[in-house]
Length: 137
Length: 137
Length: 119
Length: 119
Ligand SMILES: Nc1ncnc2c1ncn2[C@@H]1O[C@H](COP(=O)(O)OP(=O)(O)O)[C@@H](O)[C@H]1O
Ligand SMILES: Nc1ncnc2c1ncn2[C@@H]1O[C@H](COP(=O)(O)OP(=O)(O)O)[C@@H](O)[C@H]1O
Image: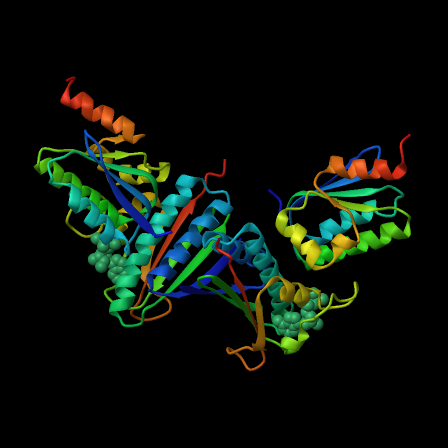
């Protein structure tokens, strides 16, 4: 069982670096290519959202937790800034082609558990926490 | 160019997880197996030292920076606690079998640049920063 | 070693867009340019995804858009060789029900030939 | 999927310690136990490193210690199959000048046979 907290900025090379690290950590703990890839994609969507909102809030700072508690890989993404979201923002059905909500829709379908809350680190931030359980056959 | 700051505890599974991530980041940026492996080993020695001293100081917290600025991979390890070290702690010659200084000797030989200073995060901590330039042929 | 590389190959049956690397926030504009240059020019389009390791939501939207635009011109977009995870992603968003997904570019061409009928 | 697995194989010419995984702070005691069980029992020792992906300073010290102890008993420690990076590490600390490093366990046995002379 381990947990690493990663601080980064919204710069694209940093988002890519941490996304690659998450994908590697998944494979390193025995996740399949599909499990690891779906976590990477979901994490990437959450980073993209955090980037947008952290940037709009002027901080440009993102915090990420990567935690493994066999067989569950949990990644959390925190950012400052409004608007706040909650779990109800995750669409149940595929959004219309031109409308918003695609990122959260993919996350909701690809991960086993998703939680969205007010960030514990700031009174106006957002935290999205997502878990996927590896089959580890 | 990117930099990630990672916060972790001195628990062995966390030290292993971040060590594996560093090794992966090296290969992902085009480092050879030897370059990546030597960075992993040097980083592991610095983590082992930080663990000892952070633990003795009672905090049990370590901070790590992983930064890539082509072709230079730089890893830094911070910990609280005394005693402070400086660059002169790195032995020029192989220490006697039973004596201290092996970890720093390996670091000094395996990495291209090593810097040891008072931690910027605390008045009684230690920071070791090590850089290796990839050949990237 | 760019993050994304796109190049177009003109075959008799279709234009093939080879994409290699990652489509993310930063590289989506490059992917968009490449697709825009192809769809609506009257030819069939095959997107060769065999060397694409990552595709995010912005990239998925572009695939939907390319498919709409092609259909509007009476043409198809075919996807060739996505990795298992990208294939799963295409299923998740339902793109697999709208565009043919095949293993290889050669198979995509077979499909187009079949559709056009024997000469 | 333990971090480190050690197992001993008794061959006519030597005891072979197969180590697999990582020797670090946490697993060094396991490595130490395995080595202590072998050195000083009057037999030659071959450490099969071919499946060892990581060895830190605490592990290196144990190899030095095992070599000292074996020499004191008129025996050898041979290292077989280290990865390129571990081979480089052994060079950095000068262990390559003190113990034979060979590609395979079979080669280590050849060495021991050569040393003992033909029967
Ligand atoms: N971290 C966040 N902070 C605040 N709002 C967010 C955050 N993440 C997503 N949202 C909002 O939730 C909505 C849906 O997000 P998402 O599904 O990712 O949309 P899309 O993929 O269409 O950009 C968007 O309006 C977005 O602005
Ligand atoms: N982060 C640190 N903070 C304080 N002292 C340290 C730190 N790292 C190393 N030292 C000290 O420097 C000396 C040499 O370190 P090292 O070469 O790693 O020794 P060894 O490998 O013998 O444990 C040791 O006495 C150790 O306590």
